[in-house]
Length: 426
Ligand code: AMP
Image 1 (cartoon, rainbow, N blue to C red):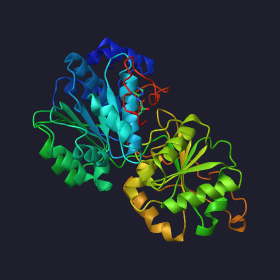
Image 2: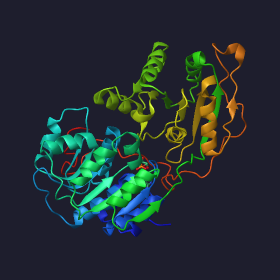
Image 3: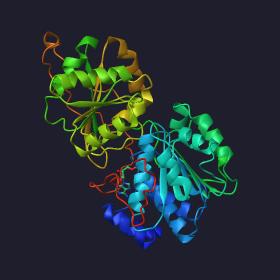
Image 4: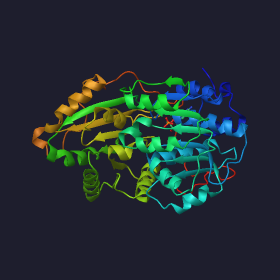
């Protein structure tokens, strides 16, 4: 089995990896790190949870350290584009954590927060810039950032960029990048538009794939509960009485639905936060931190808000509403059973959602075991324990950080010796 030292990482990075308690590199790290260290273009087919962030952050840090150069005013040497603010913050935290024994400057820019601190962070130039496309374009148009001397470009979660309607913004950014650069392209799925984009922007790339897309974790116990729409809230309250539900993500279809569920839970003595696109960045960050730290046990989210969020130790995912797009089910339940732990995914299904359930079962090629809710108790306490004997084990398993049950997302806010976290927006 390969070790990080086998990947010829330099000592400051090996130390940082040891600090994170990573024992062995994950499959995508083994495959991608040598390619990136050689300066080659890469297309990585991998979703969050596979260790893909370290797979590009570590070799990028090594290449920057090997060729020290100051980025000029307003310039950057590396640009990472991510679809969401949360993911930008997480990628930035990874640069901070893995770069803690290196002396590199970085900034992170995204919308929803004041622009001024970001402009100031960029003024003297940075080694690494992590950005969402909209805010980056604003800053480019106002002349606060230049990309003409960029060396490495990373497009993270390209398929989400497409889903979220950012693909045109991404193309606009790409237009101003220098032709001579290294490009790293990551996407969990490869729809035709994404393949076309990859073909346009990559030069002779090495392809690394760690997972078929429609896979769900083998350690996730999946259950479905048939329930009338009006009874979903009492059912959720009843389920949450179970102390085994330690840290739970509840998914709703709409932002209003997320608010309503969180309010109802809080009113009944189960404190819950809602996270969705209408919340301010500060509120989202605060809710996420509460959830991440374990202070908050319940987080109610919409699909978009939950994208890219990596919180370890989520014991349960509850699909309060089934998603319209079956692939979202796979992404949702993948929030539990991370880092070698097991997890439970419970889906509520009302009469109108039967078709959605069929689509999901078709995609994952598995019948999800049904847990019965006794009709006489449908508005009152309900049977909450699974009746199905065996969990729905779905193959193939997603990549998990190899052989390290303690793996975790690097802590945010830790600073490298020279203040790697130059961007003020975390
Ligand atoms: P990612 O796929 O980048 O979202 O990473 C998923 C999780 O795996 C994060 O919490 C990382 O901190 C963790 N991780 C990354 N690489 C390793 C590794 N080699 N061993 C253990 N955990 C890891």
